[in-house]
Amino acid sequence: MKIVPLYAEPQHEQPVTDWLWQAFGTPDSRDFFASIITTSQLEGEMPLTFVAVEGEKLVGTVGLWRCDLISRQDLYPWLAALYIDENQRGHGLGAKLQQHVIEHARALGYPQLYLYSASKGYYERFGWQYIGDGLDYPNTPVHLYQFTL
Image (cartoon, helix red, strand yellow):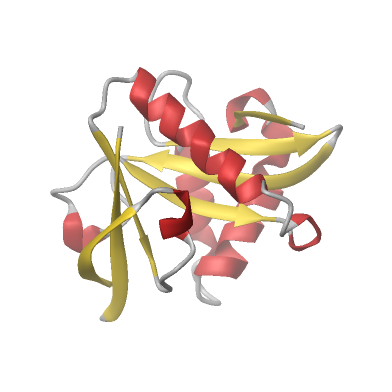
């Protein structure tokens, strides 16, 4: 298995868009997710989307974004849109994708990384520190996490 920027495996753009739309979107938000994915494929720039590929098969994705939570634009950068193919869950791929983004953000010189989640308990297992609650649009409570690099 390899983890690479999506621009190195552009044939996975549509499946990644569909994963994120179906996991995190609403019925009418596919174009929004397509825009995020399209603009996250410029080498050396953020936002950046990574994909995990096993042979030719797409198995997971994660992003390093400037902003993932509009209500907290004071925090950046963000580990965002972590998604694992349903058949690949439970095998440690989420940890590998997190670590890949952590290492990339560290190499860029960032002192910390942020993420948000609707649930608690998962990210703490990987060293993320809960720092409080926030609001996702339109008014959904979420939990904020920080990882010190």
